[in-house]
Length: 170
Ligand SMILES: [Zn+2]
Image (cartoon, rainbow, N blue to C red; front, side, top):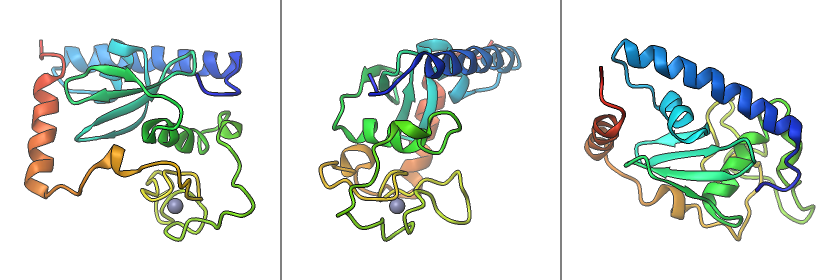
């Protein structure tokens, strides 16, 4: 559970997950794939990150889960890249700002994003070097999360696999 997680965080996540899960039912009835909705409906998770390898989400109890391409959820432990990424994302979400640890004074700002935590042109685009924190935590192995770079064909193939394993269309 994320340190500092409070009942207000819990009710925010709970409310958002309920809304998103309702949206999932609507998209499902239209035969659409909705990863964010599926994560909410299936696992009670608010999606914080998704790519063709899987997802990272948080539940109302402040537990972080890593969900693989087969939609299997595993709780991410503190010190893992998925957990660190979740904190980095929450840092930029209204009402959740205080959960991520502050930058230690001796650590320089992230050279890729200049300390913002996201790429300047798009506030929703995470900095993949510091995972949204604006500084690099040397104890986190980012490659654990993203793995080696994949080519466009494998990327497309992974997306197709995830879609095929999502809830079948009505
Ligand atoms: Zn950065």
